[in-house]
Length: 220
Image 1 (spheres, rainbow, N blue to C red):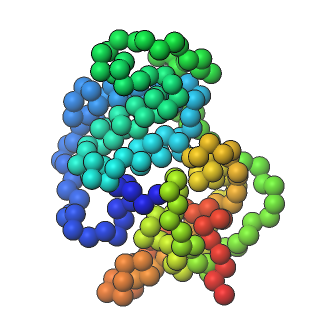
Image 2 (image 1 turned 30 degrees about the vertical axis):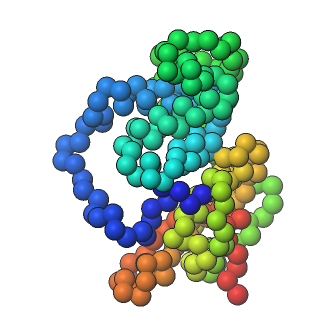
Image 3 (image 1 turned 180 degrees about the vertical axis):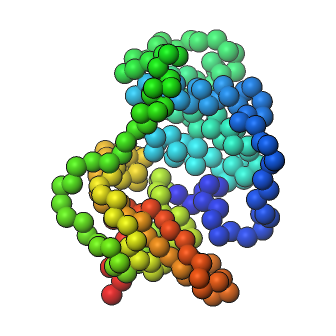
């Protein structure tokens, strides 16, 4: 979706300032938010794409003035409310009142490292041949979905070249809406910087994006 998270190519926000010796967390509550997000993600009520969409759904003005973990807290709170696991009254009072909701799994402390190291592989078996080949010129589609997508706004309706074929992976646009995995081919696509950012950009610079087959069409 075109929300506060889709900032690529937008002007007026200033330079990204790197914090020297930045700690993992600036406050203890940030560590707790990360822990909550990981533990609740393991319960099986939503997937990683739905979790991303929950964060992206924050109103752009609020998103831009919120810190990284404030956005994560917003996302996981909305997911909890959406699945009937908490309500506003409970959040305000700090007291549980809703009946418990059944979950698929509990992430125990001793299993955290193993679970994180295992990750969540998104590659799937091939069901049909790839639609594009290495070195082929393609053009991205130009659409503005209201749901989750991994095609950034600045790269829509742009010409690029297939620089790597990854294989078949879960399609996040479908997964993010809870519509199933809809596995499809995933490619690395290389774009000239001038194609994305304008003719004044150096001609030797390029940008690569990992893009799914439904985002692409042959450039004829």
